[in-house]
Length: 332
Image: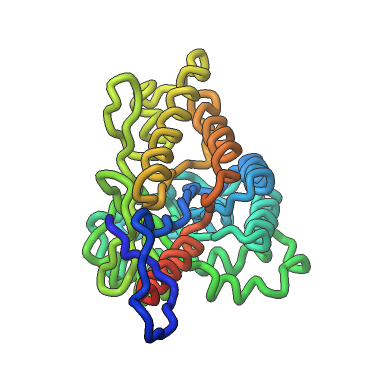
């Protein structure tokens, strides 16, 4: 991706035209790193990720699955995903109202700390055949569960004053479960007021594509392992490659080292090159003995403090990209 040079405005002069230094080169933009978490359920991992953000200065996007804001014996009985029986969820439900209370507090804490809360729908079903109406139904179920979280948890008296506005206006982005989409998704996203989608996969780090006015991000394929074969930059995909999806704590240090090397190499390629934002995805599950979360922690600790690096959420990335575009246009 080439960038237009950025020159300072020149004062009018009757003398000879201004001369530009022969070695002048356009300034590079910041290197953005965008880290997201799918599911956003395990309260221990909420604590761990929020601590990681505080220590490294990173802002994350949390894609929340809304069945974790209901119990199976409570609202879970009436939740019904399109094409499925009522009371079903591919990722389960909260085990207790106390668990929901802790999760609601973590969501609000993350929001106040500058992190982004997005939607991962509700029961983690594959929507590849869903219509616009199906997606809309799932989005409404998400909004209802989030709006009722404090009441469902039995702590309505703790509900923050700004919670209702947050539910209405603060959920800006979406990632489809299994990264599986349909033709009905985009129109439903637009009608529901979402401002970006992060459900795509790209051949390598790329700028968001725009479809009918909606920015759409894609997790990149990044080189990994001895043969440098490409894999989606997400912990689950590394888990499948490293151990065929079978938990293997014995080799956790090896898996951590491989993941960290892949993250570093993907970052260095962009930092030393075109500075396209690097996206990495994770789940609220510590696979292979926590190898991928440990690699992430080490990567952010050494990376977010580098010069010209911004570890940001998806909405922050969109704002920075828009500012870069304005700067390029005003350079002439």
